Amino acid sequence: MGSVSPPQLRRIPVDAPIEVFIDAITKDGGCICTNYVSPEVIAQANAEVKPFLDADKPWQGKLFPPETRRCNRLIWRSPTCREKFFMHPLYQALGEHFLAETYPTWYDEKLHHYTSHPLLSAAIGIDVRPGAEGQRLHRDDKMYHTWHTDATATGWTAGRDNGFGVFVPGIKTTVENGATRMIPGSHLWGDDRGASPNDSNLVYAEMEVGEAAFMLASTFHGGSTNYSKSENRLLYAMFMCKGTLRQEFATLIEYPPEVVKGWSKEVTARLGYKISSPNCGMVDMRDPSFLLEENFDPDAPNVDVDLD
Ligand SMILES: O=C(O)CCC(=O)C(=O)O
Ligand SMILES: [Fe+2]
Image 1 (spheres, rainbow, N blue to C red):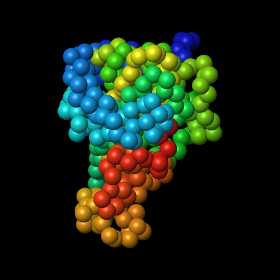
Image 2 (image 1 turned 135 degrees about the vertical axis):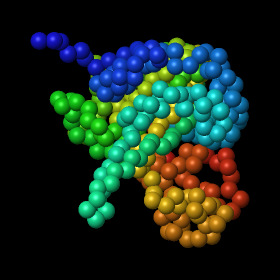
Image 3 (image 1 turned 180 degrees about the horizontal axis):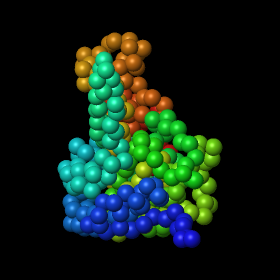
């Protein structure tokens, strides 16, 4: 009888056949891709994003943990993150594999099939500075109220996950400077259990500059404490979700802020100018209702969402 290897975070070269990545992510919930991009491309992204992290905005430092700085609207602010990290052909192909869905429905007696493709769900630069405390281990699909049945005995099945992410570090990440912790195999756990920071399968996704980690949104993980004296652990995090996870009519575009300002809170909440708890539908990590306030402060700290 062949031995079954324990869950792990495999390191796979970017030019390996896509099936190798699919196999690792299906079994372990994630993997590391070596040579995802060149170090020069990382330097370019860092230069684009640094001004936003360094700008002394009052809300930087108000969120948990206070030493961590964030760059919101990453896809806009960094063309390199957009074109080289997010639109990387491998990440896009894997996103299609794990998230695209084809669905049958009848019109009279004729069966039709429709395919929905993934959407960008989140993109942010997270700069965990020295002294920042680690996050609690969590699943990044909680905002979609995703249910998980225990599949540890049966394995991953198509459609199970609502999200799929890529983490690209801006510097070499280490246990000391706060590399993301992950629990390979935890994407198969049911909702009857949480994750212990002492889990024997927990690993730190230590990465060289130019590497990237792929992760299903159901995999337990968390940012870690930065024990270093002077290293800012910058990470670019991008997630796609299933294309069906949106409204039928794109109400935030059909009814933009300048049109609905002055409408009742009850109506605008139904249009989407209010987060769905936890943390779904944010703008700059804030409840989007601030966009409807007279003379709103674009830099006000957010107290509405749980960011851990
Ligand atoms: O900073 C990290 O390493 C991970 C961040 C994360 O998981 C999150 O903010 O949801
Ligand atoms: Fe997370």
